[in-house]
Image (cartoon, rainbow, N blue to C red; front, side):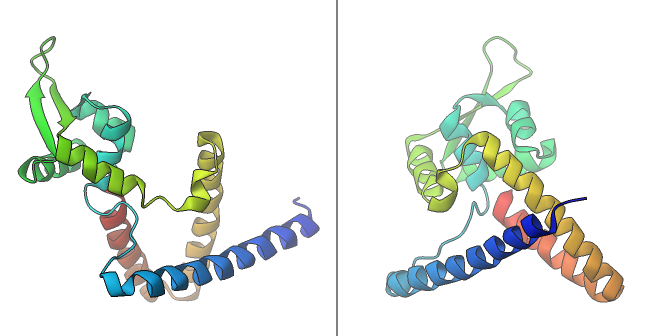
Length: 172
């Protein structure tokens, strides 16, 4: 059984984080509101641009696998990026069944903008720590979803669909 003192400490840290994050967001919005800028995390095809900026020239299949996307979703997003002249598609010279996706110069520039959207407080974490954080937050979210579902199943269904739609926009 987890230590109650540690649970209370962790809860306090989450409350502190929410308060500090809220304040930081308010400051950001005040200082950028007049410039018409919006802070958003990886909307649309940003996730693909980020992946290619780290490893350019991935096959479409490898891209889908590394981002945990379906082949269909990946194809749709890649085609949108091609139309925007941010990536190119070409057949592999070693295996004509594979489609290789590469960033254009405009795509590299856009990927740089996407990487700037990663919150500064996450940049100090290692990949292992980011994986641990994601796992912990997933467990916490699942527990909260269960609470909401138990309290009001109808409202939960609408809420969950709304959250799913929003996350799809951010992370796909």
